Length: 335
Ligand code: KG4
Image 1: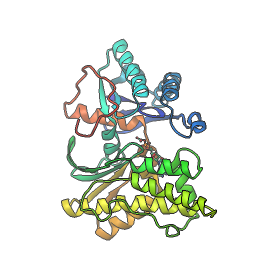
Image 2 (image 1 turned 90 degrees about the horizontal axis):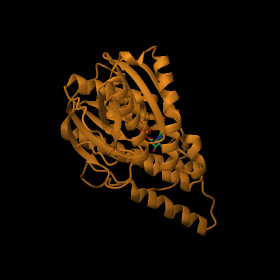
Image 3 (image 1 turned 45 degrees about the vertical axis):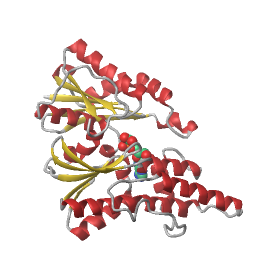
């Protein structure tokens, strides 16, 4: 059995094909990033139009690379949300068209689950129970995965996501888009203690996150430096922001681990491709003797293979609905 995964929730048109053992046969990602650079962020209509243009050839290439005939695909899994409405509708319409034309069942996938279960796609021996810290551009949450599809949400962001904080800060500092990788690059030559920034919610006994205050703190710091005619040391500021964000993530992870005693940790989503974060996670998990799973970057950022994998898990757990699927831009982990 082969499964086709279609992911168009944001600015990547990605189609991946896996088999029923969970082997990745192909995982094509067309990034629209160049189209959005002039705007300094993602423009939903531009993203939708780019998906419409790209999805046909990405589909053909995904089949070709996987040496697969579409007739051998027994399930189509498509991202249903959360994400941008227009882009989601492109992927869903494409999936539905294929499904109707070729009589292949299709199922909607919660994108957050795609990220969470990416750790199992990469490592089949990594099984629940585990703690998953999900850090993307749109979400930051920590959940206990007790069993496949049985989650206990421990905390989530009250405002901005960690990735969004990095993206907005990068924009403020005049760095290129997307901001996360740009901040990582700039921070390499920076001193994280040069500017003092608050670590969000550090004193609060909670598992929630908040990053809008940090974003505002950076804004006021930049304004103050400008007013005083002082130079903004971009490298130091990038390092300071990055460190404050990661300290908040590590603090919540430590609390969640204390609370649950769970010894397996997965860190997933686009921000998990950051090398500095990986270094700090390694330090943290080694000190506590925990098992750490951070999937490779290509599986951390948005891609079709993780969508296909949730389709496979739904198939294994008899959860294929094949009913009316609509785009759900605000889908949560509990939906
Ligand atoms: O998972 P993802 O590709 O898309 C969402 O589902 O949101 O995550 C995108 C986020 C963006 O905020 C981007 O700046 C951030 O992940 N990101 C990074 C890095 N690569 C991507 N943040 C920090 N360091 C990176 N190397």
